[in-house]
Amino acid sequence: MTGTAPPSSRPWAVAPQPVRSPEAVALMRDYMTEVADRWFLLHEGRTTTPEEVEGYVAEEAHDSLDPPAGVLLIARQGGEFMGCLGLRWFDRERGTAELKRMFVRPAARGLGAAPALLAAAEAVAREWGAERIVLDTRKDLVEAIALYARHGFARIPRYNTPEDNPYAEVWMGKELPA
Image (cartoon, rainbow, N blue to C red; front, side):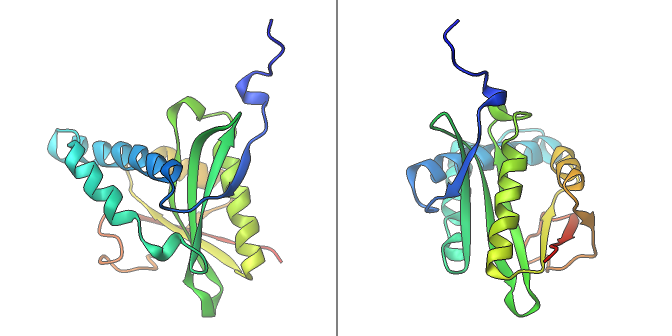
């Protein structure tokens, strides 16, 4: 017995991370590989090529998750970067923030990273003065839909345009208590 706590009992550290940092880029690469592979397998019977993944990562390294427009939160456990979640303003005048790019590496799933990321995003949104959080996702990402529902998100009408996210099929929102 080494005396170290099992992974599920170690606390998660969630903190902002620059979108272009090596840790954030690595998490985005893992995220893009997983969601793109799922989409391509479902619709085209193939996985994503490395070139496609790198193209998606380059496209997503944009300013909407950099302060002051947004933030990328990274979950660490034992020094390892295991998950991320972006939060950005969707409609500042109406007090609406938007979740983007929720991802937890497979080895950390079921160990509390996702709830820690969601709690941190809600805390940041409240600090910003947001009154609600919205998100969009795909129907095939059933685990994500279930996670959001367990954490108080409910389905809402489409709030963005197909140009904003042509893959979006499910829209959810959550009111933030004062």
